[in-house]
Image (cartoon, rainbow, N blue to C red; front, top):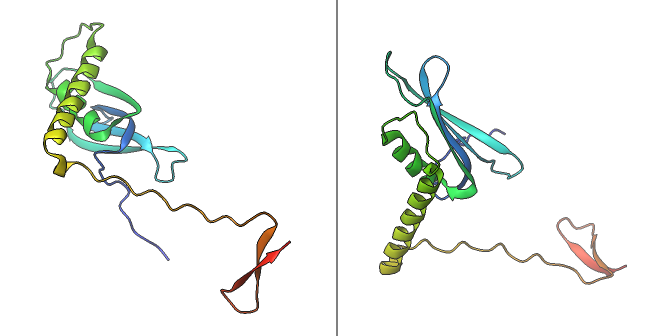
Length: 155
Protein backbone atom coordinates (compact mmCIF):
# COMPACT_ATOMS: atom_id res chain seq x y z
CA UNK A 1 0.00 0.00 0.00
CA UNK A 2 1.33 3.42 -0.91
CA UNK A 3 0.46 6.55 0.97
CA UNK A 4 0.91 9.91 -0.65
CA UNK A 5 1.74 12.73 1.69
CA UNK A 6 3.28 16.11 0.91
CA UNK A 7 7.03 16.08 1.41
CA UNK A 8 7.13 19.58 2.83
CA UNK A 9 4.46 21.38 4.77
CA UNK A 10 5.30 24.80 6.17
CA UNK A 11 5.21 24.93 9.96
CA UNK A 12 6.06 28.45 11.21
CA UNK A 13 6.94 27.22 14.73
CA UNK A 14 9.26 24.43 13.61
CA UNK A 15 12.87 24.72 14.78
CA UNK A 16 15.22 25.11 11.83
CA UNK A 17 18.96 24.44 11.56
CA UNK A 18 19.81 26.82 8.71
CA UNK A 19 18.37 28.79 5.82
CA UNK A 20 20.23 29.76 2.64
CA UNK A 21 18.98 32.06 -0.09
CA UNK A 22 21.09 32.67 -3.15
CA UNK A 23 21.78 31.86 -6.75
CA UNK A 24 21.61 28.30 -8.09
CA UNK A 25 23.27 26.97 -11.26
CA UNK A 26 21.48 28.26 -14.34
CA UNK A 27 20.92 31.74 -12.88
CA UNK A 28 17.82 30.75 -10.87
CA UNK A 29 17.32 31.77 -7.27
CA UNK A 30 17.14 29.10 -4.60
CA UNK A 31 16.05 28.95 -0.95
CA UNK A 32 17.49 25.94 0.90
CA UNK A 33 16.03 25.02 4.28
CA UNK A 34 17.82 22.50 6.55
CA UNK A 35 15.76 20.95 9.35
CA UNK A 36 15.40 17.59 11.11
CA UNK A 37 13.42 14.90 9.29
CA UNK A 38 10.04 13.72 10.55
CA UNK A 39 11.62 10.76 12.36
CA UNK A 40 14.28 13.08 13.91
CA UNK A 41 17.12 10.70 12.89
CA UNK A 42 18.76 12.87 10.24
CA UNK A 43 18.81 16.36 8.78
CA UNK A 44 17.06 17.00 5.47
CA UNK A 45 17.26 19.91 3.06
CA UNK A 46 14.30 21.34 1.17
CA UNK A 47 15.08 23.45 -1.91
CA UNK A 48 12.66 25.93 -3.46
CA UNK A 49 13.64 27.44 -6.81
CA UNK A 50 12.50 30.82 -8.06
CA UNK A 51 12.89 32.88 -11.23
CA UNK A 52 16.30 33.87 -12.52
CA UNK A 53 18.08 37.13 -11.85
CA UNK A 54 18.07 39.58 -14.78
CA UNK A 55 21.36 39.88 -16.65
CA UNK A 56 23.58 42.65 -15.38
CA UNK A 57 21.92 42.90 -11.97
CA UNK A 58 24.56 42.72 -9.26
CA UNK A 59 24.38 42.32 -5.55
CA UNK A 60 24.80 39.77 -2.83
CA UNK A 61 25.26 36.20 -4.11
CA UNK A 62 23.76 34.49 -1.10
CA UNK A 63 22.61 34.81 2.50
CA UNK A 64 23.22 31.99 5.00
CA UNK A 65 21.37 32.20 8.30
CA UNK A 66 22.28 29.70 11.01
CA UNK A 67 19.60 29.05 13.60
CA UNK A 68 21.17 26.02 15.27
CA UNK A 69 17.74 24.52 16.15
CA UNK A 70 16.96 27.49 18.41
CA UNK A 71 15.18 29.72 15.89
CA UNK A 72 11.80 29.04 14.32
CA UNK A 73 11.13 28.98 10.58
CA UNK A 74 9.03 32.14 10.85
CA UNK A 75 11.88 34.06 12.52
CA UNK A 76 14.42 32.79 9.96
CA UNK A 77 12.21 33.95 7.06
CA UNK A 78 11.80 37.31 8.80
CA UNK A 79 15.60 37.71 9.02
CA UNK A 80 15.94 36.65 5.36
CA UNK A 81 13.39 39.23 4.19
CA UNK A 82 15.18 41.94 6.18
CA UNK A 83 18.53 40.95 4.66
CA UNK A 84 17.11 40.94 1.12
CA UNK A 85 15.52 44.38 1.55
CA UNK A 86 18.83 45.92 2.62
CA UNK A 87 20.95 47.51 -0.08
CA UNK A 88 24.07 45.45 -0.76
CA UNK A 89 27.28 47.02 0.57
CA UNK A 90 30.48 45.03 -0.05
CA UNK A 91 32.06 46.13 3.28
CA UNK A 92 31.26 43.95 6.28
CA UNK A 93 30.93 45.15 9.85
CA UNK A 94 31.40 43.20 13.04
CA UNK A 95 27.94 44.05 14.36
CA UNK A 96 25.85 42.31 11.68
CA UNK A 97 25.26 39.14 13.71
CA UNK A 98 24.52 41.16 16.84
CA UNK A 99 22.05 43.29 14.86
CA UNK A 100 20.23 40.17 13.61
CA UNK A 101 20.05 38.79 17.17
CA UNK A 102 18.69 42.09 18.50
CA UNK A 103 16.08 42.16 15.73
CA UNK A 104 14.87 38.63 16.62
CA UNK A 105 14.84 39.39 20.37
CA UNK A 106 12.79 42.56 19.79
CA UNK A 107 10.33 40.65 17.61
CA UNK A 108 9.97 37.89 20.24
CA UNK A 109 9.43 40.45 23.00
CA UNK A 110 6.77 42.26 20.94
CA UNK A 111 4.99 38.94 20.37
CA UNK A 112 5.13 38.11 24.11
CA UNK A 113 3.71 41.54 25.02
CA UNK A 114 0.94 41.11 22.45
CA UNK A 115 0.00 37.63 23.74
CA UNK A 116 -0.02 38.88 27.34
CA UNK A 117 -2.53 41.55 26.34
CA UNK A 118 -4.57 39.06 24.25
CA UNK A 119 -4.32 35.69 26.09
CA UNK A 120 -7.13 34.10 24.08
CA UNK A 121 -4.85 34.05 21.01
CA UNK A 122 -2.02 32.23 22.80
CA UNK A 123 -1.13 28.82 21.33
CA UNK A 124 -2.64 25.80 23.09
CA UNK A 125 -0.24 23.68 25.17
CA UNK A 126 0.80 20.41 23.54
CA UNK A 127 -0.62 17.15 24.84
CA UNK A 128 1.87 14.95 26.64
CA UNK A 129 2.17 11.33 25.49
CA UNK A 130 0.52 8.74 27.75
CA UNK A 131 2.67 7.12 30.43
CA UNK A 132 3.61 3.58 29.37
CA UNK A 133 2.27 0.66 31.40
CA UNK A 134 4.99 -1.39 33.12
CA UNK A 135 4.45 -4.83 34.63
CA UNK A 136 5.71 -5.65 38.13
CA UNK A 137 9.05 -7.42 38.43
CA UNK A 138 8.78 -11.16 37.82
CA UNK A 139 5.61 -11.00 35.70
CA UNK A 140 5.08 -11.19 31.94
CA UNK A 141 2.26 -11.69 29.46
CA UNK A 142 1.77 -15.22 28.11
CA UNK A 143 -0.12 -15.69 24.82
CA UNK A 144 -3.20 -17.94 24.82
CA UNK A 145 -4.87 -19.97 22.04
CA UNK A 146 -7.54 -17.24 21.89
CA UNK A 147 -6.28 -14.50 19.52
CA UNK A 148 -5.80 -11.08 21.15
CA UNK A 149 -5.93 -12.46 24.70
CA UNK A 150 -2.85 -12.61 26.92
CA UNK A 151 -2.62 -13.76 30.51
CA UNK A 152 -0.35 -12.31 33.20
CA UNK A 153 1.94 -15.04 34.51
CA UNK A 154 4.57 -15.06 37.21
CA UNK A 155 7.99 -16.10 35.96
